[in-house]
Length: 232
Image (tube, rainbow, N blue to C red; front, side, top):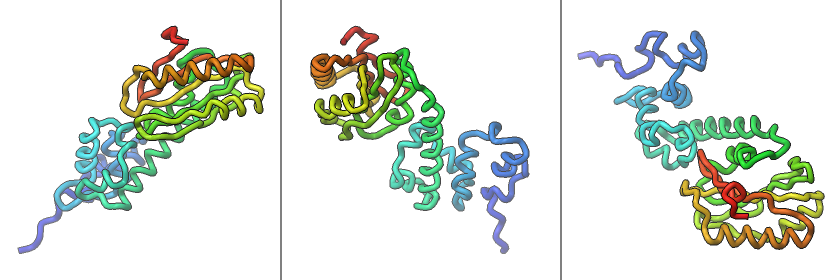
């Protein structure tokens, strides 16, 4: 008895249903997220097509591409049909997308609101699995002079060196400082430590005729502003 062709194979689909051919013929915008991921992984397994495998992977993260981007190579390889090469391809493609968003918002040169700070730093901090503390240095016109990571830590928090913050501010002639860090847990409420470091930096900056203008807590989709909430 001859083996039947694998009906799950994309090769057996009509051109209108094949993700690669569909992209070429109709454009990338018409493809679903699952079809785009299917193009990345190329093939599925004996039991399911690349599109079905992609749908299963996406379903595990509630069809959220940002959440998919947070999966490690090892986590991706837990799915049957995803080896190291395919996992690396998915991770690389999503990282390119994240960096592209970062380049698009890098045009923000002047801070006029807490939303501007969120737009500036969310592509950098919003999807990280660990906590990072950043400083945005401004001149007297609120133009961004520099932005830099001050510390990197675990999910429980970071260590902030006040002297390093002020040293860099003096070197570049900054007048205003905006503090920012992410909460990988997704919670927006500032902790006691968040409030403490804000006050510590505010007091130290005032001694050098500088001003802490805000402290922004960033999550994947939202942010909390100390200034907007009158906590400065």
